[in-house]
Length: 112
Image (cartoon, rainbow, N blue to C red; front, side, top):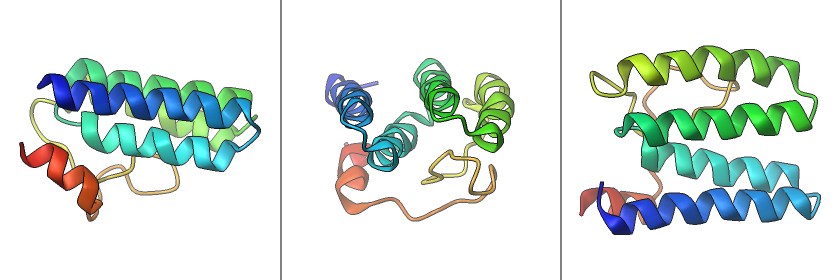
């Protein structure tokens, strides 16, 4: 993983923490989704994104998201190097195998 991509992932994680602390849970989760999109092809970072989503779901008392993230943590650990649905935001509100459009600013980071 390039240093620039790693920095972008870490920035999204940090922004998620800040927004959640400010009481903006939905905005925080969007930052976690962005981190997920950026991290999908890198097993450790991909698992970390799902662990962060799991933690968010726990703190927000979201049982459906907790269950979805539990299964996605295992899948990320096993399949990140084999196949990932590009652009998938990683939340339990979308199919775990559905490719999705990648936001333009993230596409630029991933293409480098």
